[in-house]
Each structure stands twice: as C-alpha cells, then as structure tokens.
Image (cartoon, rainbow, N blue to C red; front, top):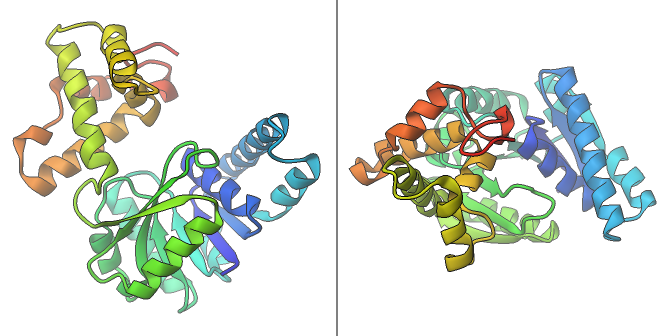
Length: 281
C-alpha cells in the first residue's frame, strides 16, 4: 500500500495528507477549490516548519514530504491509482454518501475506502458502495501530525482483512489505532459530546461562567483544555451535528443538544473558525 488519496483539504484533510507524506506515502490531495488546495499546501508547509524548529524534521525532510503530495481538483484523476482513499469532507451525511458513491465508481477494485467521519455510520456509508467489506472508518484527531490516536471503526460488513490492514497502516504512521464497532458517536464522541453538552448546560443555567467551568475541568480533572474551549476548537456546528446523530441514533433524551448550543449555531457563532463562540478569537 503506497498510493493514498485524501478527499477534502481542510484542517483534517491537510493534516492527514501531511501525516501520510511524512511517512513516505505518495499522496493525492483532492478538493474542488484550487484556492483551498493552495491554502492546504501552505498550512502543511507551516506545520513542517514547526517540526523543523522542534528538530523533529530537517529542511531536506520538508522538501521530500511536500514533493510526495500532488493536488487535484478532479476526483477521477486523484483516485486513479489509490490503494486507500481517506474521505475528510465536511461532516454532512448526504455529502459523504455522494462522495462514496463516486469513489466506488471511480476507484480501482482493490482500493480501500475510509472515512474520517466523527459520528456518521460507517455501515450506512458502506451501503451506497459495492465494496462494503472494504469500507472502514479512520477517525484521526486534530492536529493530525501530533495526535497519536486513530479510532478505527468497523462497519457491519467490514472484513477482518480490511480492519487488519488499516490497523497496521495506522502503526506505520506512528499512530496508536483503537478498534471500535459502528455505533453512534463510536467511543470518542459518545463520551466527549455529552461532556461538552453538560458544560454548555452549566453555562446556560448560570452555574458559572465559561472560564470558571473550563478552569474546574482543567485543574480539577487534569484536562488539557476545558470543554467549552474545546467545543470552540472543534466547531460548535460540528458539535451540534454529532449530538443530533447521537440523539437520533439512540433515541435517548440525554443526548439532546442544549438550547444555547442550538441558538449559537443559528447565530453563526461557531467558535474559533468564525472568531466567536464561548470565547472571542
């Protein structure tokens, strides 16, 4: 397995491309917008510079890594030689299903198809393809070049061979893969999102202000970042989307998103990416 295609060049997509290229893979980074690809390559270059400053990489390493990343605005051209495609498009079910239908049609028969989804059912994604045994979840954490975890999600029909291949591949990236089954939110967001939602409820009900809530969790529970700040970094729209997947998937009112979160998303206060969320940026 040598040729990796990454669909989507945003924060997660460019981080995934960076990680694969750093470990010697040939990467096709695909996005419909040329400007997004230019921004992604610039971001990867800046992140490589940080690694050079920390003496993790050399200038020669940076040159080689960037040389292994080719950009495409055409999906067919970008996946023609792929051994693995990692989809990292926006967290929207209909968009992802459409992409996987196209990937199934365009990719070679041997290609494995992975989604970086943080909540959408791998079984449902696989159902729109004719290769459900070769569809799997690879949920990387942000920032991808730094964070060790890869949540490897098996769909209902994902084969043992596909699972083992992705587990081994993740280790080649110096990651720690954790195998989980396909239930709403998997492990990471099934636990994290109710925590974030409860912190938002504490703010909504006037228990304390945002900084106080985050300080309690950082100093009292040794969390590196408070839940409200973390929500801002994830994106409040993404948090809301995941909570709705959990609420619908389990039919349990404990996953219902806090009204404050719903209102903030409706008002366009999405966190760091819009400059305003629970904090100002």
